[in-house]
Length: 280
Image (cartoon, rainbow, N blue to C red):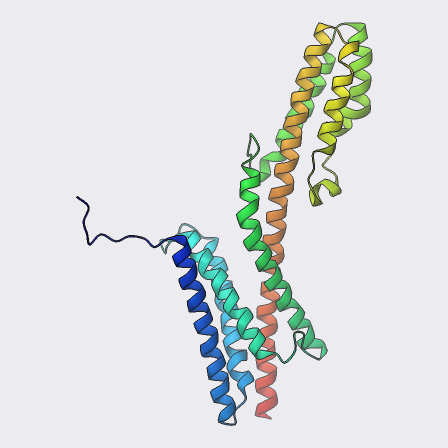
């Protein structure tokens, strides 16, 4: 019989609801603090500005924590959720802080654009972290990013070996010509930029269709080689898909981190300039 006092972890929906409520409450508290400051003839921008700067610093620290999974301070997924809702809180405080979406002035306007960029990249990161891993798992193999070039070289070498192993003159002429014109550039070249932006199976389908059309011109040895080349085409396409998806994640991480650092530095400089202006 299970223990009636045993702890049961709340469901994901309940945890998300609680997180939204806590985040909304925190934004309401920040808004109330700014209103109290205004009623006392103080500058509410000081409240929202210092809160926003501190939150940006906290987000940076949370981001660093997420990338050090060995620390015994809770799971990475938990810290990721904290990072997400802290970012939502920062967006809410930003809306309280600025009179318009993009502030006036060169420096303030640039800082506003940077903050909006890091916010937009964070929203994209939520979407990407939930969709890209599923798409990566859809392929048969999931090699590491730093091993993809080696796998491509192995496929190119195997394709060349199969073409060189042909013995029948008809197969050499037909399959050899198709390999030199279409397959060799495909196996040796990098994936095109258009594929990296929007991965599609157009090249794969075109090459497989071309190999299928050669079937009537090939003998038994040539058909076997064509079948193996078709398998290599599929493997290469899976590798290119892995490369495109993993590269997308890496570019997002670098961009989000770089803009976050710029926002933090700009926030600190902004607070220092405002403090100096009011001090004088």
